Image 1 (cartoon, rainbow, N blue to C red):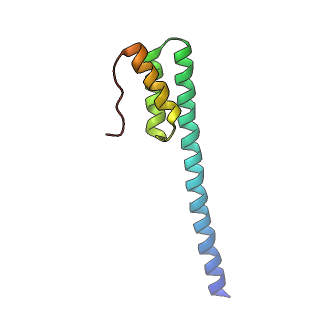
Image 2: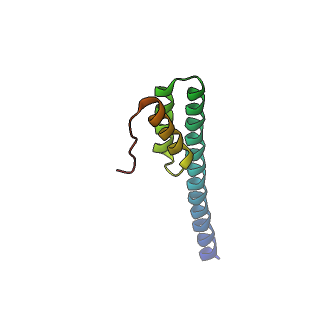
Image 3: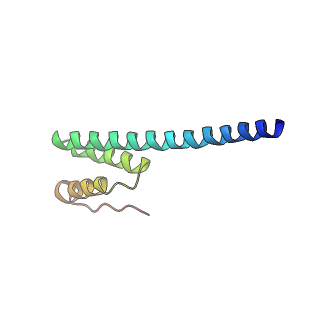
Length: 88
């Protein structure tokens, strides 16, 4: 019986850790999305430097969203006429 209780406690702790990692990942993605959306708002306001800052913050948090890179490339090509290089 004590062994079963210890196993249950251990499994409960493992589940808690797993859930906290999932929650952290979810929050990180949401924060990255928020920066992406802010970048879009700055583009609409023609504040391209601020948009680039927000897109870069989004990439720092979640570098797997191709839309962020696309928007950065558009700004870089059209408004700054300079290349953007990531993945160094």
